[in-house]
Length: 343
Ligand SMILES: [Zn+2]
Ligand SMILES: [Zn+2]
Image (cartoon, protein in one colour):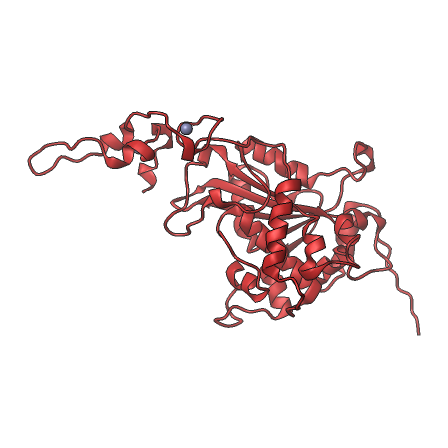
């Protein structure tokens, strides 16, 4: 009884979007994109899907300040060619992904140390670049508008899929700060969230299924080393790896002679070799704004911050103390970088 009901999908972005809507779950969409499942009625354009996994960080004392963007990018085709031989814990797939990390240059001095500590100097995947908001936007636009045929824009753009973990936090922030809303880009054909995928796979928060799973618990489920978290490049990578593991293995943990830790170590090393991005600059001092060294090597004298000095209060005798300790030496900063108001 074969009642062939092959629905026809046009070879357009909208056609690919309609095609992906026929998959009942997000995990099944990703399984198709990775080539784990096939569909006879897939539009040809679906083979050109680009996947972007996004994570962002904001300053903990002023959420209007975007501090970091992490983005992992891969094409469906690059990963499909290894789907018959994904390697231990998907190693061959994970090595096809580009891992990028950007610190927003105007806010790079705002480092989260208290409520949600994350050290952006401990990025483990690819290389950190410092970018202005305009450069960050240009970088994202490039990731979301690839030509199907390189150098032939008349052939149209690649359909794009966005992945994130609790993605609305990131996309709302990007829209507000740099004016680019990833899921609203015209090329986007599906938006996947690892919190939803985890629900589909029956992977729950240890406190019970009524709680959303965090990235730490999701990584732990698959033994993914959750090292140096809360910096956008690392969190994007843990999101991407978890998403690919859910597509490959569901909620199962497979055993290979090579451990997940060894695989992720090797992926980190290869990402530093191959994930090169031309946007932004490689070096920036958050203390003196020089572009030839990092803050750890900064020796420039910076006078005590006048904004901090203006906040001094006289003691009981009516005397004003000398300069505050946090306006001197390592803590010295220009008034335009003064975080006094946000303390
Ligand atoms: Zn410096
Ligand atoms: Zn100050």
